[in-house]
Every structure is written in structure tokens, then in C-alpha cells.
Image: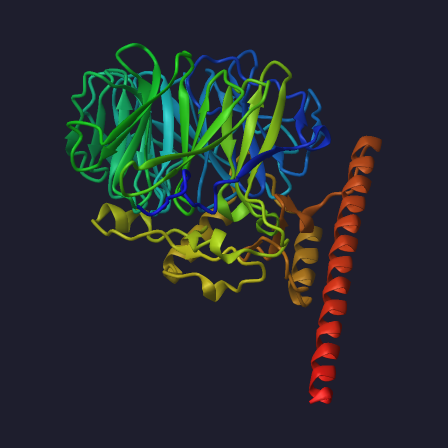
Length: 525
């Protein structure tokens, strides 16, 4: 018999979690005390949004990613709902647009100024009215621009077209009524052609999101699902829930056959809901339990046994919710493959947590970062409603990559429509002054410096974002604490560059020695 190793070979076998230091956390955030089983946090490469506790309505904070440290208790908020905010989601194709839903049965769309929230924003750019009870979940379509899905305690899922000019939209383009109880989670496949949901009746459903037709429904008595997600293009679903013995468990399903799970696995006997996160580029699955301090991560394969446990991140700080950074906002030079933003209510902090693949080299590792979903929609809302299907527009994460490396580029009509919508003057949105416009024009005429080494470049706005920080929009520090933080960041950057230079010097000396040895060997012959 041939010997086989007791473990499965994988490049992600040694992934580890690295929590941010205290000065790089967000301290003093009044995190919401709502009992809703949602993430309460949304992140993009520019901003961090978190639902907060407040009196007299609902509100949430929008912070620049670089705004770490102690947060001012009077920091301006986005507050326009009459009831508690239950869910927030950034538009995947517009880093300055965020949607929120509330107990007041409305969904509101907000435009965030480039410089961030400098005063309380109370008037949304759009308001969606159609649900009769509180709205608990919202999801953007992954490939079509300005298509939003919402579900409420009236057991309905509504599809909204935000390209309509009216500020108040009362009629959704589609209402899906296949559920008999409250919807607990929604998830799309990669192309946005299928929508899967978990419901309070413990059933999993697969729905055609365009027509609202029910395609599949689970009837498993042994697994009570609470959250469900699509596993990228693997044509499988993963659900988290409880077994017949009330143990927390995960189950894997074939999207075309929900009669019995392909695989299920018991986790523990805790009671908190488990939030699943899946990275379709690395096929890694992360499980974070509400009220837990640990995060389990696995690798998913298309063959049995399907789920392969890798390791576990352990922490004594329990999380109430979790946000995660899109792939285009990660630090690829440090081999970061995933980043969480952990809401810790007992300390009122938000702790960034990076998942890192240990590599000796500090350069870009191409095998870790395949082409990933980018920031451009594959089609417009009307095209999707008319029956068009398209996969996501892909982009490269390689530092210094040019825009032409993006595949499946959208039409000029889609881009011009998006830019036009951004440029519209909306109530509650700060407008740039004439002086600022002159400065922007002058900057656009000047040649742009090379962005080699940056993990991501915002080609639409011409600004570079590295490690989640926008270096082109840094405002001068206003307090001693902010000045100290800027100083520490500069010192870290200088130290990193010195180490990089030292490594380059060593490599040069090694090459010189090799050349000398080759010449000596040739001379001896």
C-alpha cells in the first residue's frame, strides 16, 4: 500500500487571523442593541458603516476607514428613519451609495459625500415604500446595477428598480410571495440568476429572482436552517442552523435537489446564530457565531467529503455582528485573503481582523488572487428586467494593473448612467464649492504618479486606496490624537520601506556573488 499523509495538502492550511492593534480599532462606537440576527455592519474600500443605538428613531454611523481610534460621541450620523435601523448594505457598484431598512417599514437610499459625513444627513436620495411591516433584510443584485431586494415581516420579498427618477418609489417591479413566515436570510449565486432564502419555518428555498417562481424547496426534518448562502459557482448551498438535538450544525445542499443534504456536520451546543461567509476566489468558508469569540474556517471542494476543516481563530471578545471587506479593498502585498470587522459590544469597539496566508515574500502572490468581481455592473436594471443574464465584471487585484485588465467591460451607457446619477444634486448631500471644483480641474490636468505597489486603484475617480486608506483625500489632523496617529502611520511606513530596501540590498549582493562565481568558473575552464 502507498503511504498517504494524514492531512490534505492546501495552500490555505496555515491561514491565521491577525487582529488590529488598539490604535487601529474604532473605539467608543455605540453599537446597536437590537436582537435582530443581522450583521449590523457594512464595509467597502472607503467607508465603514455601523448601526448605532439612538433615541427617537434609527441611525447609523459612516466612518472613513482611516478614522481609527476614539470616535467622538457627537460624530454626525445618517438619521432619517422613524424606527430602529435593522440592516444596511453598500451598493457594490458605488462606494458612495448605501441602503438602509428599518422598523418604520421603509427602505432609504443615501448618497455619502466624498469627504465623508461632516454633518447629520436626514434626507435620503430615494425612499422605497411598499412593505406593510418592518423591513428586516436588504440585498443588492450582484451583477445588475441599481436593483435592490428587500424582505419584511409581511413575508414578502420586493424587487426595486432604483433607476426610476422619482424620489419616493411606492411600487416595486416584482413582489415574491412564496414564503409563509419571516425570511431570515437571502443570497444570490454569482451571476444573480438564482436567489436562495432561509425562512422561520426552517425551510430553504431557491427562487428565480426575476419572475418570483419557486424552483426548489427543502423538506428536511433533521436540519432547521437559520442562514443560507450560495457557494459561488459550485452549484451548492450551505446552511447553518440546528439539528434535531438543538446542536448547531452546517449542511451542504445541491442547488437542484434540496430533498436531502449532501453533507452535514455538528459544531457545538451553543445557541447563537452562526453567520456564514464564503470567498468564491479561494473557496474558503468562515463561520462566525453570534456571541462567540472564535471563527472557524474551512475549505470547500466539489468532491466528497466536500468540507475540509482548516483551523480556528480564537478570541475572548464575543462578536455581536460582522462586516467584511470586498476583495478589491484587501492588502494584497501582505497576502491578506479576507478581512472582518468585528463588533464587540462589551467594549464598544470595532476590531478589524485580517485573514493572512503566511508567505516569506512580501510581494504580490498571483496564485492567491485570481480575477475577482469588480466595481462595474455587468448590465443596467432595465436590461436585467428584460431577461438579460450576465456574469460579474472581473478585475485583477495585481498592484498597478491597468483598467484594460478588466474583463467583460460594461457598455458606455451603463457607465454614463452611473456617473449621471452620482452627479445629480440630492437633498442632504454636500456639494463641492467652486474653489474645490477649480482644484479638482487643476489636479486632473496634472500627470498622475505611478501607483505601483497599491493593492487597488479606483480608476473611476483617479484616487488610490491602499490598506483601506484613501491617501488622496487625507484631511489635515485636527487634534493632537489625530496628529499622533498620522505620525505613527508614517513611522510604520518608513520602517516597512527600510526593511524592503534591506531585502533588496541582500538580493543584489547575492546576485553579485552568483555572477562572480559564474565568471570564476568560466575563467578556470
